[in-house]
Length: 82
Image 1 (cartoon, rainbow, N blue to C red):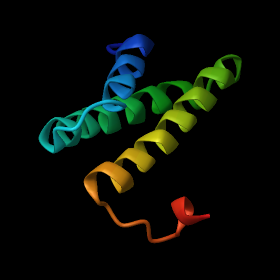
Image 2: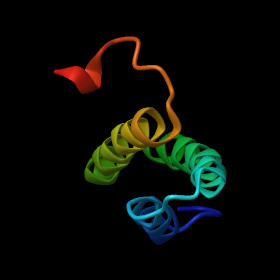
Image 3: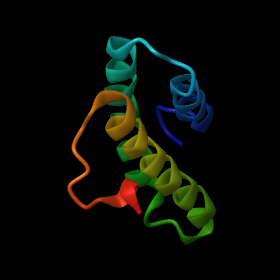
C-alpha cells in the first residue's frame, strides 16, 4: 500500500473513539484525511482490491461523523440527522 500501511489508518481511526481532547481529535482527523485520500487513490483503479477501497470509504464516512459530532463541523446535507 505504498508509504502507509492499512493498519496505520485503522488504529488512528480507532483512537478517535474514546478521545476527548479536541486538539488531538483535530490533528488526528487531518492526518487521517491525508492517509485515506492517498490509500483511496492507490486502490481505486485496482479491481482486485475493491474490498479495501470499500473499507476506506466506510472509514471516510466514520471520519465525517467524528468531524460533525466531536468537532462541531456543519452537516450541510443532514446526513447525521436521518
